[in-house]
Length: 305
Image (cartoon, rainbow, N blue to C red; front, side):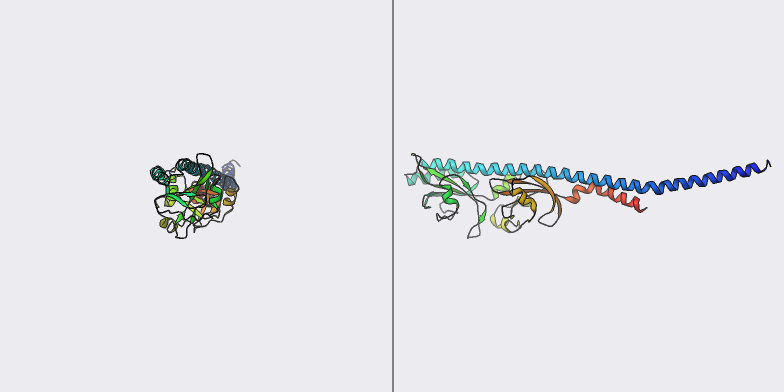
């Protein structure tokens, strides 16, 4: 009988070993899917957080850009008010009116052309001498400019040039409105304004009220109308997305959209109220979410194992 105890002991130890292996295997079978599921949930949460953070940063950058463009546009309206005051002081002397405009024009280098018109739209003075603004007196902005400063949207003129008019009233010494001073803004001035944006802030694009591209940070080196209308795609490239409608309604926010090139991006947007424009600042979704994509792939690998 005594000789049988060692055999029973070995049998019990072997049984316990097999049970331990089965127990560990069972725990792994149950726990690995749970761990993988948790990993997937965590990476999805991290992905959502990264997307929200990127969208918030984009909307803040878009709002800052919109404010900068709006302030610059308002300053150009102030410019024509100052020019109107100067023109009013020389209104009755045609030679002095032209000489005064020629003296002041170099101080206002955001304009291609400055022109002084009477209430019928006839040219009284211009710098340069040949106006780049074709005025008949029937333009929609002209009657409005007889009472207050106006800023038009950028348009394409009959000769294919880009025209961007800011205008305001001229009053004589008695306070009576006697004419209009108008300026044709450099479209490239907008490129210069945006050239010093913060590095790494993403792609900055601005769209007009018709959802047509009027600025693209990828082309800040373009300085002439042909380049802007050609390679840059201004006034040809169109973005039809609800974010532009929200910006037009005065909203600032963010969303995941397809950009002009059809790329998946996370974008912030904001309105430029004075112009009815929308600023869109975007970053590639793949770049933003890259840190968690690797973790997600690892979780899927664990699940497959």
